Image 1 (cartoon, helix red, strand yellow):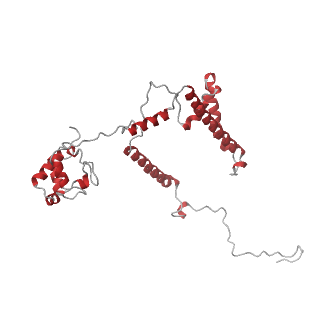
Image 2 (image 1 turned 90 degrees about the horizontal axis):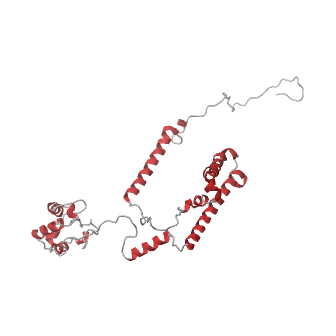
Image 3 (image 1 turned 180 degrees about the vertical axis):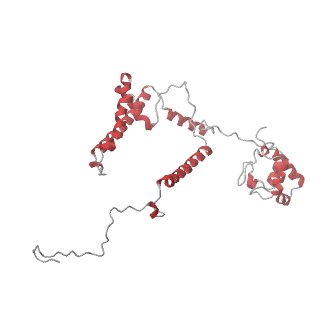
Length: 290
């Protein structure tokens, strides 16, 4: 190793064996080098996302089919009402009533202003290219957001306020309040509170038949209730639509599903084969259409 400032001295560079010699550009390892931590987007990741989407869609369809639509009262075309959209469209409803968005300026209101608004959204990624994430250091994006939010709040409040004033001036009661009052009246009177189709109640056929006493003595009421609507067991109203007398006798003697055979229990309660036969005949008459 050289010492001093003599330029004629021989300079010897001492290498460090711990530093490996590079081979130029190092190609990053493929995703297969990280098993269980990374995967190809197509088709692996995309297929997983598709499967999750299918499961969610099937769940929504099951809920849609299993529960009836919560319908309100039928629309009355003869009623005098002031139409108004749902709350999340009130700002658009009010915007379309402004002078420059209707009448002679309808093209400007529907195409011009909305075109500028959506154009600003499209240009936002190109105008706001900084890496800063704090909103007060992103003037363009923050300004667009606050202006849009203020406009939506102002238009929504103005639309609802004007609607209330119009209703008061015309001495009209809002439709939502009328529906609530009507639903409360129907509930108090035991009537349906919506226009949804209500299932027709199935009545008991021949309530005074002696088989009703047999039904109670055989302890059938413990599972099917005195009114045959079912307790821990299924309802027997309309059971004659599904099973005839022979099938009902077979169920009493052999059981079905979670229901155990009840023949021995009935005999132990003091009933005879003739009583059980009459009970099966009476149950076979329990039909929805009489």
